[in-house]
Length: 326
Ligand SMILES: [Zn+2]
Image (tube, rainbow, N blue to C red; front, side, top):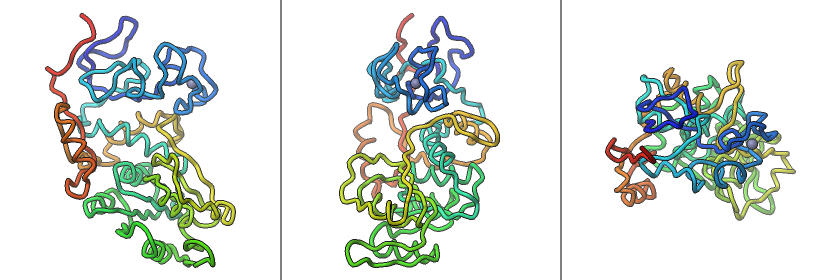
Protein backbone atom coordinates (compact mmCIF):
# COMPACT_ATOMS: atom_id res chain seq x y z
CA UNK A 1 0.00 0.00 0.00
CA UNK A 2 1.28 3.46 -0.87
CA UNK A 3 1.82 5.61 2.24
CA UNK A 4 3.52 8.60 0.66
CA UNK A 5 3.91 10.03 -2.85
CA UNK A 6 6.73 12.26 -4.11
CA UNK A 7 5.99 15.75 -5.46
CA UNK A 8 6.75 14.92 -9.07
CA UNK A 9 4.72 11.71 -9.09
CA UNK A 10 1.26 11.41 -10.58
CA UNK A 11 -1.02 8.51 -11.36
CA UNK A 12 -0.80 6.81 -7.97
CA UNK A 13 -2.47 7.74 -4.68
CA UNK A 14 -1.82 7.27 -1.01
CA UNK A 15 -3.78 4.24 0.18
CA UNK A 16 -3.62 2.49 -3.19
CA UNK A 17 -2.69 -1.20 -3.14
CA UNK A 18 0.33 -1.84 -5.34
CA UNK A 19 3.19 -4.25 -5.93
CA UNK A 20 6.58 -3.28 -7.28
CA UNK A 21 8.88 -4.55 -9.96
CA UNK A 22 11.98 -4.15 -7.79
CA UNK A 23 14.59 -3.98 -10.59
CA UNK A 24 16.69 -0.83 -10.37
CA UNK A 25 17.46 -0.38 -14.07
CA UNK A 26 18.06 2.86 -15.96
CA UNK A 27 14.55 4.31 -15.60
CA UNK A 28 14.36 3.70 -11.84
CA UNK A 29 17.85 5.22 -11.56
CA UNK A 30 16.72 8.47 -13.15
CA UNK A 31 18.31 8.05 -16.59
CA UNK A 32 16.28 9.40 -19.49
CA UNK A 33 18.60 7.84 -22.05
CA UNK A 34 18.48 4.11 -21.50
CA UNK A 35 21.36 1.65 -21.78
CA UNK A 36 21.02 -0.72 -24.78
CA UNK A 37 19.61 -3.54 -22.63
CA UNK A 38 16.99 -1.39 -20.87
CA UNK A 39 16.09 0.12 -24.26
CA UNK A 40 15.45 -3.42 -25.48
CA UNK A 41 13.12 -4.09 -22.54
CA UNK A 42 15.67 -6.04 -20.52
CA UNK A 43 16.24 -4.00 -17.34
CA UNK A 44 17.23 -7.28 -15.67
CA UNK A 45 20.42 -6.96 -17.75
CA UNK A 46 20.88 -3.21 -17.15
CA UNK A 47 24.43 -1.95 -17.62
CA UNK A 48 24.04 0.79 -14.99
CA UNK A 49 23.13 -1.06 -11.79
CA UNK A 50 25.96 0.89 -10.11
CA UNK A 51 25.17 4.37 -11.48
CA UNK A 52 22.51 7.07 -11.23
CA UNK A 53 20.42 8.57 -8.45
CA UNK A 54 20.48 5.59 -6.07
CA UNK A 55 23.36 3.48 -4.76
CA UNK A 56 24.65 0.35 -6.46
CA UNK A 57 22.35 -2.67 -6.44
CA UNK A 58 20.29 -4.64 -8.89
CA UNK A 59 16.97 -4.26 -7.10
CA UNK A 60 15.06 -2.95 -4.12
CA UNK A 61 16.29 -4.96 -1.16
CA UNK A 62 19.83 -5.04 -2.55
CA UNK A 63 20.38 -1.28 -2.56
CA UNK A 64 21.17 0.71 0.59
CA UNK A 65 19.02 3.70 -0.42
CA UNK A 66 15.71 1.97 -1.00
CA UNK A 67 15.21 -0.30 1.99
CA UNK A 68 13.45 -3.54 1.24
CA UNK A 69 10.36 -5.61 1.84
CA UNK A 70 11.60 -6.90 5.20
CA UNK A 71 10.49 -3.58 6.64
CA UNK A 72 7.18 -1.76 7.05
CA UNK A 73 8.04 0.65 4.24
CA UNK A 74 10.53 1.15 1.43
CA UNK A 75 10.88 3.57 -1.46
CA UNK A 76 10.22 2.79 -5.11
CA UNK A 77 10.39 4.78 -8.33
CA UNK A 78 7.06 5.55 -10.02
CA UNK A 79 8.07 3.31 -12.93
CA UNK A 80 8.33 0.32 -10.58
CA UNK A 81 4.84 0.63 -9.10
CA UNK A 82 2.10 -1.68 -10.39
CA UNK A 83 -1.50 -1.21 -9.19
CA UNK A 84 -3.22 -4.26 -7.74
CA UNK A 85 -6.82 -4.74 -8.91
CA UNK A 86 -9.54 -5.23 -6.28
CA UNK A 87 -10.10 -8.78 -7.51
CA UNK A 88 -6.63 -9.76 -6.30
CA UNK A 89 -6.04 -10.50 -2.61
CA UNK A 90 -2.90 -9.36 -0.79
CA UNK A 91 -1.81 -13.01 -0.54
CA UNK A 92 -1.96 -13.40 -4.32
CA UNK A 93 -0.45 -9.98 -5.03
CA UNK A 94 2.64 -10.83 -3.00
CA UNK A 95 3.34 -13.63 -5.49
CA UNK A 96 3.52 -11.23 -8.45
CA UNK A 97 7.30 -10.90 -8.16
CA UNK A 98 8.23 -14.61 -8.02
CA UNK A 99 5.53 -15.41 -10.60
CA UNK A 100 7.14 -12.77 -12.82
CA UNK A 101 10.43 -14.69 -12.50
CA UNK A 102 8.71 -17.87 -13.69
CA UNK A 103 6.87 -16.10 -16.52
CA UNK A 104 10.15 -14.60 -17.77
CA UNK A 105 11.85 -18.02 -17.73
CA UNK A 106 8.92 -19.67 -19.52
CA UNK A 107 8.16 -16.96 -22.10
CA UNK A 108 11.84 -16.77 -23.10
CA UNK A 109 11.87 -20.56 -23.46
CA UNK A 110 8.29 -21.28 -24.33
CA UNK A 111 7.60 -25.00 -24.75
CA UNK A 112 5.61 -26.10 -27.78
CA UNK A 113 2.38 -28.02 -27.20
CA UNK A 114 3.98 -31.23 -28.48
CA UNK A 115 7.08 -30.90 -26.32
CA UNK A 116 8.04 -32.48 -23.02
CA UNK A 117 9.24 -30.25 -20.21
CA UNK A 118 11.05 -31.41 -17.09
CA UNK A 119 10.95 -29.08 -14.08
CA UNK A 120 13.58 -29.97 -11.49
CA UNK A 121 12.45 -28.86 -8.05
CA UNK A 122 9.01 -28.08 -6.63
CA UNK A 123 9.86 -25.20 -4.31
CA UNK A 124 8.11 -21.91 -4.95
CA UNK A 125 9.98 -21.18 -8.21
CA UNK A 126 9.53 -24.71 -9.57
CA UNK A 127 5.82 -24.63 -8.77
CA UNK A 128 5.41 -21.17 -10.26
CA UNK A 129 7.23 -22.38 -13.39
CA UNK A 130 4.61 -25.11 -13.78
CA UNK A 131 1.89 -22.51 -13.19
CA UNK A 132 3.48 -20.17 -15.76
CA UNK A 133 3.63 -22.89 -18.43
CA UNK A 134 -0.12 -23.44 -18.03
CA UNK A 135 -1.03 -19.77 -17.54
CA UNK A 136 0.52 -18.81 -20.89
CA UNK A 137 -1.52 -21.55 -22.55
CA UNK A 138 1.12 -24.20 -23.25
CA UNK A 139 -0.16 -27.77 -23.45
CA UNK A 140 3.32 -29.25 -23.26
CA UNK A 141 3.72 -32.42 -21.23
CA UNK A 142 5.11 -31.32 -17.88
CA UNK A 143 7.10 -33.61 -15.58
CA UNK A 144 8.11 -32.28 -12.16
CA UNK A 145 10.40 -33.66 -9.46
CA UNK A 146 9.15 -32.98 -5.93
CA UNK A 147 10.80 -33.78 -2.65
CA UNK A 148 7.76 -33.62 -0.35
CA UNK A 149 4.19 -34.88 -0.76
CA UNK A 150 2.70 -31.39 -0.26
CA UNK A 151 4.91 -30.10 -3.09
CA UNK A 152 3.82 -33.00 -5.30
CA UNK A 153 0.16 -32.18 -4.62
CA UNK A 154 0.69 -28.51 -5.43
CA UNK A 155 2.53 -29.37 -8.67
CA UNK A 156 -0.30 -31.63 -9.81
CA UNK A 157 -2.92 -29.01 -8.94
CA UNK A 158 -1.03 -26.36 -10.94
CA UNK A 159 -1.02 -28.53 -14.04
CA UNK A 160 1.90 -30.99 -13.94
CA UNK A 161 1.10 -34.16 -15.87
CA UNK A 162 3.57 -36.33 -14.00
CA UNK A 163 5.11 -35.72 -10.58
CA UNK A 164 8.16 -37.79 -9.72
CA UNK A 165 9.14 -38.31 -6.13
CA UNK A 166 12.51 -39.68 -7.25
CA UNK A 167 14.68 -36.60 -7.26
CA UNK A 168 18.00 -38.11 -8.20
CA UNK A 169 19.91 -41.23 -9.04
CA UNK A 170 19.03 -44.24 -11.16
CA UNK A 171 15.32 -44.06 -10.30
CA UNK A 172 14.99 -40.55 -11.68
CA UNK A 173 16.80 -41.42 -14.91
CA UNK A 174 14.77 -44.58 -15.40
CA UNK A 175 11.46 -42.82 -14.77
CA UNK A 176 12.18 -39.86 -17.05
CA UNK A 177 13.38 -42.25 -19.76
CA UNK A 178 10.24 -44.34 -19.41
CA UNK A 179 7.94 -41.32 -19.72
CA UNK A 180 9.80 -39.77 -22.65
CA UNK A 181 10.46 -43.03 -24.49
CA UNK A 182 14.18 -42.59 -24.02
CA UNK A 183 16.94 -45.03 -23.14
CA UNK A 184 19.28 -44.83 -20.19
CA UNK A 185 22.84 -45.49 -21.35
CA UNK A 186 25.65 -46.28 -18.98
CA UNK A 187 28.93 -44.90 -20.29
CA UNK A 188 32.19 -46.68 -19.54
CA UNK A 189 33.18 -43.58 -17.57
CA UNK A 190 30.80 -41.36 -15.65
CA UNK A 191 27.15 -41.29 -14.71
CA UNK A 192 24.22 -42.46 -16.83
CA UNK A 193 23.16 -40.48 -19.87
CA UNK A 194 19.67 -40.43 -21.35
CA UNK A 195 19.33 -40.98 -25.09
CA UNK A 196 16.11 -39.10 -25.79
CA UNK A 197 14.75 -37.15 -22.82
CA UNK A 198 13.09 -33.80 -22.25
CA UNK A 199 12.98 -31.03 -24.85
CA UNK A 200 13.40 -28.37 -22.17
CA UNK A 201 14.61 -28.80 -18.60
CA UNK A 202 13.96 -25.97 -16.15
CA UNK A 203 16.44 -26.33 -13.29
CA UNK A 204 14.69 -24.56 -10.41
CA UNK A 205 17.20 -25.69 -7.79
CA UNK A 206 20.63 -24.75 -9.16
CA UNK A 207 22.95 -27.15 -7.35
CA UNK A 208 25.80 -29.01 -9.04
CA UNK A 209 23.74 -32.16 -8.82
CA UNK A 210 20.60 -30.75 -10.43
CA UNK A 211 22.57 -29.01 -13.19
CA UNK A 212 24.35 -32.29 -13.91
CA UNK A 213 21.00 -34.11 -13.99
CA UNK A 214 19.43 -31.41 -16.17
CA UNK A 215 22.18 -31.74 -18.78
CA UNK A 216 21.87 -35.54 -18.84
CA UNK A 217 18.06 -35.62 -18.89
CA UNK A 218 17.71 -33.15 -21.77
CA UNK A 219 17.44 -34.68 -25.23
CA UNK A 220 20.22 -34.21 -27.77
CA UNK A 221 19.76 -30.68 -29.11
CA UNK A 222 17.51 -29.83 -26.15
CA UNK A 223 17.72 -26.93 -23.77
CA UNK A 224 18.46 -26.44 -20.08
CA UNK A 225 17.19 -23.25 -18.46
CA UNK A 226 18.88 -22.21 -15.22
CA UNK A 227 16.15 -20.58 -13.14
CA UNK A 228 17.56 -21.49 -9.73
CA UNK A 229 20.44 -19.49 -8.35
CA UNK A 230 23.37 -21.39 -9.82
CA UNK A 231 26.64 -19.90 -8.62
CA UNK A 232 29.62 -22.21 -8.24
CA UNK A 233 28.17 -25.67 -8.82
CA UNK A 234 30.67 -28.46 -8.35
CA UNK A 235 30.68 -31.90 -9.87
CA UNK A 236 29.02 -30.92 -13.15
CA UNK A 237 30.08 -33.09 -16.08
CA UNK A 238 29.74 -30.91 -19.20
CA UNK A 239 29.92 -33.82 -21.65
CA UNK A 240 26.25 -33.50 -22.73
CA UNK A 241 26.84 -29.85 -23.71
CA UNK A 242 29.10 -30.90 -26.58
CA UNK A 243 28.15 -34.54 -27.07
CA UNK A 244 24.42 -33.74 -27.26
CA UNK A 245 24.74 -30.05 -28.12
CA UNK A 246 22.53 -29.24 -25.15
CA UNK A 247 21.97 -25.52 -24.97
CA UNK A 248 22.17 -23.78 -21.58
CA UNK A 249 20.33 -20.54 -20.95
CA UNK A 250 20.06 -18.38 -17.86
CA UNK A 251 16.87 -16.67 -16.74
CA UNK A 252 17.15 -13.91 -14.17
CA UNK A 253 14.37 -11.78 -12.70
CA UNK A 254 11.94 -10.37 -15.29
CA UNK A 255 11.92 -8.31 -18.43
CA UNK A 256 9.48 -7.09 -21.07
CA UNK A 257 8.02 -10.23 -22.61
CA UNK A 258 6.22 -11.00 -25.86
CA UNK A 259 2.80 -12.31 -24.96
CA UNK A 260 -0.20 -12.71 -27.27
CA UNK A 261 1.01 -10.07 -29.69
CA UNK A 262 1.98 -7.44 -27.13
CA UNK A 263 5.05 -6.53 -25.14
CA UNK A 264 4.39 -6.54 -21.42
CA UNK A 265 6.48 -6.39 -18.25
CA UNK A 266 6.55 -9.86 -16.67
CA UNK A 267 5.53 -8.66 -13.19
CA UNK A 268 2.59 -6.71 -14.67
CA UNK A 269 1.67 -9.81 -16.63
CA UNK A 270 1.81 -11.84 -13.41
CA UNK A 271 -0.69 -9.46 -11.79
CA UNK A 272 -2.93 -9.58 -14.84
CA UNK A 273 -2.95 -13.37 -15.20
CA UNK A 274 -3.75 -13.80 -11.50
CA UNK A 275 -6.50 -11.16 -11.69
CA UNK A 276 -7.98 -12.87 -14.76
CA UNK A 277 -7.96 -16.13 -12.78
CA UNK A 278 -5.82 -17.76 -15.46
CA UNK A 279 -4.11 -19.36 -12.49
CA UNK A 280 -4.90 -19.77 -8.79
CA UNK A 281 -1.76 -19.27 -6.75
CA UNK A 282 -3.35 -18.35 -3.43
CA UNK A 283 -2.84 -21.80 -1.86
CA UNK A 284 0.92 -21.40 -2.32
CA UNK A 285 1.05 -18.85 0.51
CA UNK A 286 1.08 -21.36 3.35
CA UNK A 287 2.47 -19.30 6.24
CA UNK A 288 2.10 -15.70 7.42
CA UNK A 289 4.27 -14.03 10.05
CA UNK A 290 4.57 -10.65 11.72
CA UNK A 291 7.97 -9.12 10.94
CA UNK A 292 8.93 -9.36 14.63
CA UNK A 293 8.60 -13.14 14.24
CA UNK A 294 11.27 -13.28 11.53
CA UNK A 295 13.29 -15.91 13.41
CA UNK A 296 10.34 -18.26 13.43
CA UNK A 297 9.74 -17.44 9.76
CA UNK A 298 13.32 -18.40 8.89
CA UNK A 299 13.09 -21.62 10.92
CA UNK A 300 9.91 -22.47 9.06
CA UNK A 301 11.28 -21.93 5.56
CA UNK A 302 14.45 -23.88 6.35
CA UNK A 303 12.51 -26.92 7.60
CA UNK A 304 10.12 -27.56 4.72
CA UNK A 305 9.68 -31.24 5.53
CA UNK A 306 8.15 -30.60 8.95
CA UNK A 307 6.54 -27.21 8.30
CA UNK A 308 5.00 -27.92 4.89
CA UNK A 309 5.91 -24.39 3.83
CA UNK A 310 5.72 -23.35 0.20
CA UNK A 311 5.73 -19.54 0.50
CA UNK A 312 5.93 -17.68 3.79
CA UNK A 313 5.05 -13.99 3.86
CA UNK A 314 5.18 -11.11 6.32
CA UNK A 315 1.95 -9.32 7.12
CA UNK A 316 2.08 -5.70 8.22
CA UNK A 317 -0.45 -3.75 10.25
CA UNK A 318 -1.16 -0.14 9.24
CA UNK A 319 0.34 0.93 12.60
CA UNK A 320 3.68 -0.63 11.56
CA UNK A 321 4.16 1.90 8.80
CA UNK A 322 6.55 4.76 9.42
CA UNK A 323 6.43 7.68 7.02
CA UNK A 324 9.74 9.10 5.88
CA UNK A 325 8.53 12.70 6.28
CA UNK A 326 5.47 14.92 7.06
ZN1 LIG B 1 19.89 0.08 -18.13
